[in-house]
Amino acid sequence: MFGPEHEELKRSAKRFIEAEINPHVDAWEEAGIFPAHELFRGLGKLGLLGINKPAEYGGLALDYSYALAFAEALADIDCGGVPMAIGVQTDMATPALAQWGSDELRREFLAPSISGEVVACIGVSETGAGSDVASIRTTARADGGDYVINGGKMWTTNGTQADWMCLLANTSAEKAPHHNKTLICLPLKAKGVTVARKLKKLGMWSSDTAQIFFDDVRVPQRYRIGEEGKGFIYQMEQFQYERLWAAAAKVPALERLIAQTIEYTRERKAFGRSILDNQTVHFKLAELQTEVEALRALTYRAAQKLLAGEDVTLLASMAKLKTGRLLREVNDWCLQFWGGMGYMWESPVSRAYRDGRLAAIGGGADEVMLAIICKHMGTLPRA
Image (cartoon, helix red, strand yellow):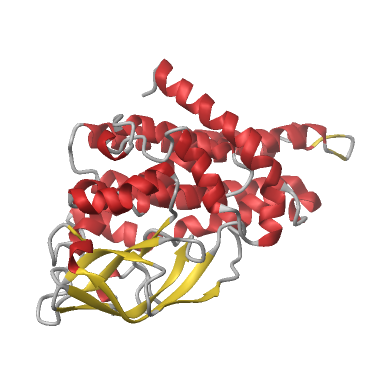
C-alpha cells in the first residue's frame, strides 16, 4: 500500500508528534483541552492538513493513500483525543467542502483550514439524533439571500475552539428527510451562536467537545456546500472518509498497545514466572494481533477501492464496525493482563481503554454499521 514517499511523510509527521505533541499530552489531558490553533498551524506548515486536498487551496494534491499514511502516523500520539481532533479537520469536516464547495467558498473556508489558520468542526449530531442523521431538527430557513439557522448540535469535537462548522440542517419542511438537508459553512463567531458548555466525557479528555445552540443565526446562502437538498448525500459520502480514517488511525494504535502489553507482561512476575509465559496470555495476544492484521487488510482494500473511484460504503462500514469491536476487545484484554497497574488512571492501557470506547458510538454506532452491511447483503426485513 505504501512506498518510500509515504514512509517519508510518516516520518515527518512522527517527528512533529515527538517534538510538539507527546511532551504535552498529559497536561492537555488534565486540562481537558489542547491548543488547537497553535498545533494546527504547525501541522499546516508541514502540509499535513491538506494532503489530498486541491493544490489551488494550499493542499498537496496527493492521492488518498497519503492521507491514509498520515492517519496511521497519528497513532504515535499518546492519547486518542488529539488525533481525533486532527482527523475532524482533515477527514470529517472538510471532504464535502473540498469536493462540492464553490471556488469562493473553498477559498474562504478550506484554504485556511488546510493552512491551520482556522479550526473546523462538524455539526451533525443532536441530542435526539446521533446515528439517526435523518432525524436532525436544526433548520436553515431561506430569507432573501440568507439562511436563518435555529436549533443546536451536540457532541461537537473541537467545538469550543472551532472557527467554523460544517453544519447539516433542514432547508425544507416539505421534502422527505433524505432530500431536505443541506450542508452549510457556519462561522461560529456569527451572532446567535452560543457554545453552551464543554462536555465532560469518559475518555478523549484532551479533545474539547461542545454543545452548541443557534438562535436566528444569519449566514449568506453562498455558504451552502453544493446543491440545496443534497446535504444528506454529501454527509453520507463524508462519513466514508471518517470511517476509513478511524480504522487507519486505530490499527497501529492497537498494535502499539499489544506491544506495550507484551513488554509489561514479560517483566511482570506472578507465582515465580512472567505473566507472558502463561499460555492463555501469549495465545490471546497472538489471536488479537491476528485480528488487528485482518482489520488492516480490510482497511487497505477499502482504500484501494476508494482510490479506484468505487463506492466503499460496504467496506468502510465493515472496517468501522471491526475497529469499534477490536478497540473494546483488545483494550479490555490488555488491561486485564496489566492487572492492578492496568486499572490505574495514569497507565497507557487505562487511557486507551477510556479513549477507545467512543469508536463503537461516534461516526455511526455499531448497530448502524450492521444495518448498512445488512442492506448491502439484502437481509434487512422488508417494511
